[in-house]
Image (tube, helix red, strand yellow):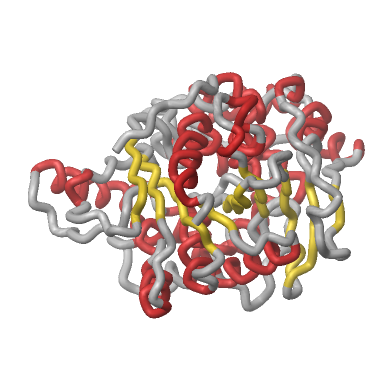
Length: 437
């Protein structure tokens, strides 16, 4: 099933994360939206001294010898990174991006000892559906921003008034302006934090959307509070019912996955086993953070080998700057370690599939035990483009609770940023019949 593209122009929406003048004003939070006194407004603010230190470090970057072979084959291409760093020094305007980020309504609160940063953007439509959107790695809350305005104010972005959402975008523990994970943190900690966050905001029933690590949060939330979750949505395909290849296309897919596991999953192993060793270098070197992040933007987005086909330098550096100015790259990657999946066998063949296969396994069993399956929607973008796209034939039968399986020929691992108009269209279509349920 394919959902028609909405009328929102992609280039216009993408400017949301690249040019401060293009970021639209979004609906102000109603006075009653924050129901708890321990929710504090938050403003992103980087000191002049920190910006001066950043430029000093960038100018003093020690460049390694260039890699041999094809550009990007050993990792981030030095020539591209040097161009990006030069732009960061001479042309990138953090103050403009900081002002643009602050046009959204940011808050912080404490939940179970965790400091949680989140954006809360209510719609002016009081009947809007609350929607919590969870990012993954290396996206941060930045990943969701290009889709927020169209969700909050649909009539200004090609939709009907009845398609409005109250949008909540929290930062995972360890990411950006959230505090670092506690000693007992695992990905399974997050659903409980998000349920309590929605409690604080006064939202009894709500929908979920999540990508990458965020993709497993919706089903886990629904497993815990099935009567409160209107629907669960994520990029990707419904759960597979057949894994053994039966066609040439399926065999090619699994061969591609073997290559991907061998060539593209080293980051999972280092982040999942020795994240602290990695943290020292990345926390000390802004060029190092940029190299670590931009390589994934290139490999995982639908950019045909050039990250700037999807993200401008300003957009890339805004994401990188969030990590740099918060010193959070080292704590962000701990989610891989805390999952435990990379410190136990079997490996390495299944390593590249770990995050993909995690989604919904435990949650599905819990939901079945609870006797209710929340409606689910799967928005099938190409996904991580450095591996083959899963053939649709791998889904033998679509479960009854899957209400929408859309299919798009474009869009990589970051659809909220890469293809916001398509994602917004999917979310509107999926939730439309569920709003009065």
